[in-house]
Image 1 (cartoon, one colour):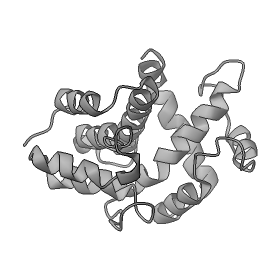
Image 2 (cartoon, helix red, strand yellow):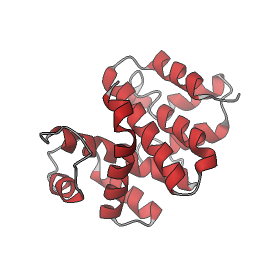
Image 3 (cartoon, helix red, strand yellow):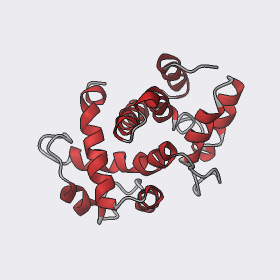
Image 4 (spheres, helix red, strand yellow):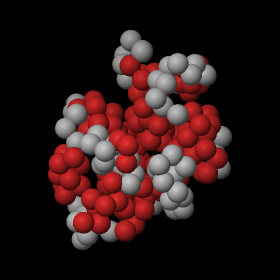
Length: 188
C-alpha cells in the first residue's frame, strides 16, 4: 500500500491521542525531512518524513510492546516493509533486535531521543525556542543525567557512532533540523 503523509497522519491519530506524542511525531517528521535533504536523499524526503511521523505509532497504547506492536499494526494494513523495518529499527537493543541498516534508519535512531533532550533544553530558555539554542547549552544539560532523564544518552551516543558523527556534530545538526521545522510543531 502506498503511504501518503495524510494516511500516515490518520493512522498516527488512530493510535495516539496525547498532544505530547503527536507533537513529538511532528518534530521527528520535520527533522527526518531536513536530514533527507541535507544528506542527499531529497527525492525520498516524503518517505523519511513518514517514517519519522510513524516511528512511535504503538508507544502510547502499547508501551511495553513498543516497536513490536507497530509492526503488526502496519502489516495488517499492508504498509510497505521498508517503513515497518525503519520504524521498528529505532528500538534496536531496547525492544527489538532489528538493526538500523540504511542511513535514514541510523538518523532516526540517533535523533529520536535527542530531539526530546534538545526540546527540553529549549523550554528552559527565555525564548523557549531552538532558534537561539547553541550546542554548548545542550552539552551542559546533557551531562546532567537527571535532566530529561527519559532521553537515553546511551542511545544518542550509539546513534552518533552508527552515523560516524561526533556527538557535538549530531547535536548541532539536530538543532539545525529542529530550527527548520519549529514553526510547524510549535503551532500544533
